[in-house]
Image (tube, rainbow, N blue to C red; front, side, top):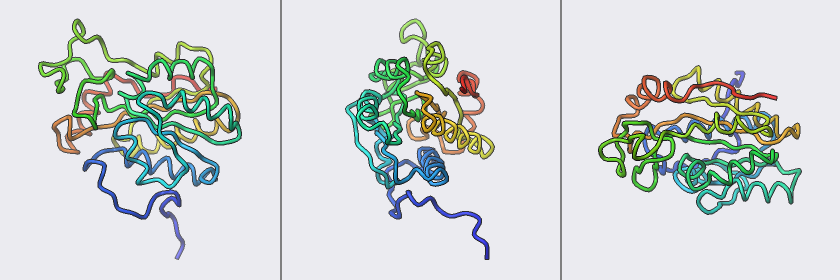
Amino acid sequence: MEIVYKKPSNLSETKPNNFCPGCMHSTAWKLIGEVLDEMELTEKCVWIAGVGCVANAHRYIELDQFNQPHGRACAGASAFKRCNPDTFLFTYQGDGDLAAIGLGETISAANRGDNFTVIFINNGIYGMTGGQMAPTTLIGSKTTTTPFGRTAGEHGYPIHMCELLNTLQAPSYIARCTTADVPNVRKTKNCIRKAFQNQLDGKGFSFVEIISNCPTNWGMTPLESLDYIHDVVLKEFELGEFRCR
């Protein structure tokens, strides 16, 4: 019998339950694991975890890894890559970690064109710490810190990281995708592969934003959260490749 698919070698054999049911962090990590295996990078790779639900992935993936304080993943990645330029390196961060407290570190690394990859999970909310408003929270969304809904006048507008980074000259690859359905899962995998290849080719900073869900803090079932992404979130955050050098 011909084997047409097998689990990525870098995914753990354990069965942890530290991601909520329906959370698409697990889908993102499956794609990352597949791409690392297919590109023969598993044994050459280090990943840096941001703070939040993203850090739970150490139970799922068997790669060399270290954590940074909240928002400092890109700063740590810049230092590590300069000291170990031959190491393949990526950060894995959420919207609160990357776009709030870590916004300065993210923009600075991108502006320098540092040669590593950022995987940015955007679910529009602080997941681990109780469902507070994040920089990417949509106007009108109710969170624990915006119980009457986010308003532009009081809280500002959602930050669009791809568009913001696209104003800089140095980044080599910038893309926004989603894992809300099978066709887009395939597109997301392709974006991750392109970003990783850009790093291997020494082209500099690459950035993949993945529009994800948070059924628990959105107060939805997993299926409802996927419909919400299609019906609401993607109208605010346009999918596509913003830069590909």
